Length: 115
Image 1 (cartoon, rainbow, N blue to C red):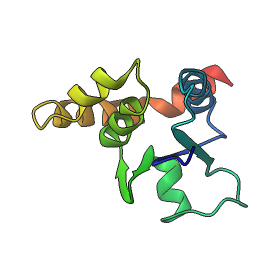
Image 2: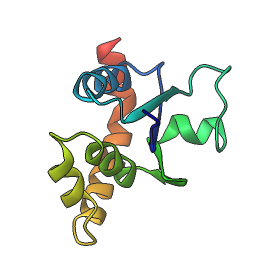
Image 3: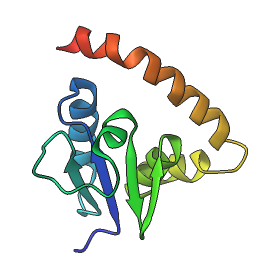
Image 4: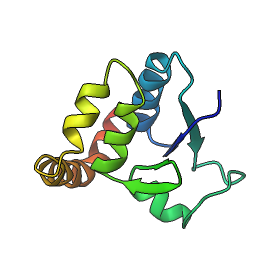
């Protein structure tokens, strides 16, 4: 099956690896192509540092980051699809983006804790 969704993740991040492992288990249809951008051999659609700093996903040729990227990923998984649809609503999206930005501030500490 050809994936319409590509997820770019930081394989050097323990949190990211755990989350992607869970999503891989849930993606029984193989709807998502996963790209570890911490691997320098991987081609990147934009600057690698930007991909490592924020979560990105490409859906049908459109590149999303942050909360919109998570919503796209969730929509690709049947079990999580309702969450992904709600997460991408115009009223919900800004709230989730604020939450994601807050998480990004905590991410370095959480990474050290999980390492």
